[in-house]
Amino acid sequence: MKLLTFVLLVTTLGMNVVTRSSQSQSSVVRLDPKLDEIVPANAEVEKIAEGFGIASGPVWVPDNGGGYLLFSDLIANVIDKWTPDGKVSIFLRQSGFTGTDASSVGVGGEPNNGVTKGAIIGSNGLTLDRQGRIVFCAQGDRAIIRLEKNGGRTVLADRYDGKRFNSPNELVYKSDQSLYFTDPTSGLHLRDNAPKRELPFNGIFLLRQGKVQLLSKDFPLPNGLAFSPDEQYLYVNDTKKKMITRFDVQPDDTISNGRLFVDMNNDKEDSGHGMKVDKNGNVYCAGPGGLWIMSPDGKHIGTILTPERLTEPTFGDADGKTLYMTGITSLFRVRLKIEGIRPPAR
Image 1: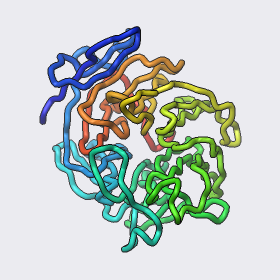
Image 2: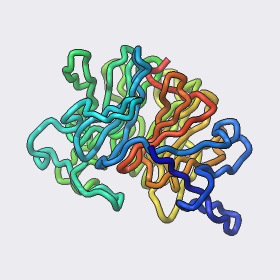
Image 3: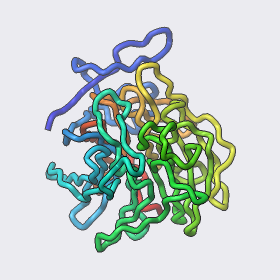
Image 4: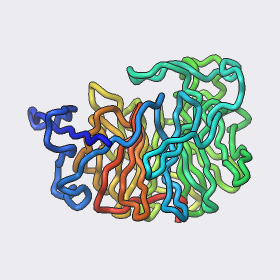
């Protein structure tokens, strides 16, 4: 396994400029002493797999042997499985699109990452429900799907107000098993201008007691979702606005009072992809340069640098202290001092 180390090069006019470099001695930019309580001084980012179309949506699945990592390949249309012995295998084929003609449902196109070209029809975000079943966003089939223990698939939701979703992207369960998910046009051919688009907005939705509710349609490209440890707040990021918004969660599971949590604007890279939260309430989000770590009060306290653009992090291993990160074509990990919040929800 190859160790990858990258560092912050310069600080100009009081602004921290994150740059990837192969000549550095550290893979962490430390912007605040609080980061020392999270990331060890000798932390090193390790590449553990590579060669994917677009990797995303990772989730750690515990089992009697310790567990394994599942993640989506948006181009290959599969869910892959990584085991601690370093092996990668296909866990589920046709994970995002089960048809034969993608044009018939209007999916596909060129992802805007400058690396890979192809139809984005595979699954994206993955999570676990309280019974340990895999629940995922099927972008090509434009639905939220649950994988049953016998291998069957159950459609949990595929429409709002009688109209098909765009291409569900990320999802997260609350402890009462209400499911929140984002639905941008990322997986539709021509995106917002897709001829087969049915919903005239990119939404944030709630699936509660079998009913789909619209929570917000004010985001141009909503992506990652995460709850604070006490579930009083829901964090939502938007890839186009390059901002993370924090909402208050109401007793009926709706959200209100959205306000800016962190501005991740950077002229060179898109920002705001998958997010996770640790047990102390720190927020982890793929952003410029690698993985941003933010304190519960919205301060950017450090960045874990990576050699390629990240899509999403997740916590894994038996103690929940290994941070796994999907990049565009690779899979990375780094050990932390703190345990992350992992599904299934408490």
